[in-house]
Each structure stands twice: as structure tokens, then as C-alpha cells.
Image 1: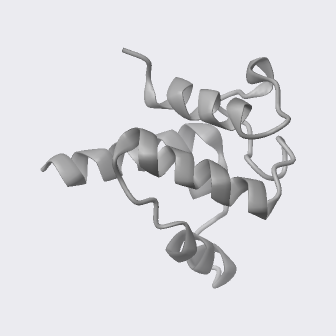
Image 2: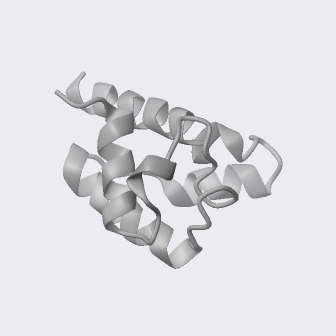
Length: 93
């Protein structure tokens, strides 16, 4: 079974102009991959559907904007994959 990272990277490649080979664990979704906020919302929707969860992207963005969390915590690929894993585990639990 593909890892969460691989599934998310595939979703990003399908829903943006980013080549799959350019999506690395340390890639920042916005800064490195150049995905704009509208495309990111489409990607989050696809992630929600693929994983059967609801990504709290508004809450994450508020945390970052308020200075309560670094953007990297949610928007660097390896960390995004970890957050998705946590959401899946919480739903299953």
C-alpha cells in the first residue's frame, strides 16, 4: 500500500501543474511547489476524499497566521503526511 506521502504527492500532481518527481518530503506546498491557495483547497478536498477525513486547513492557517505554529508544521510535505496520518488514526480510533 502506498504511503500517505506518496498518495498526497500523487493528488498534488493530479490537481496542479507540479510534476510528481518534484514533490519531495521537504517540499513546502506553497513556497517550494508554487501551489496557490485556490489550488490548495482543491488538493485538500481531494485528500479529504481519498483518506475519508476532513483536513482542518482553516484551523491550521489560523494557527500559522496567529504565530502559534510554524507554517512548516502543516505545509511541508512530510509534516502534512504526518498530520494526515494523525487524522486518519483519530477517525479510526
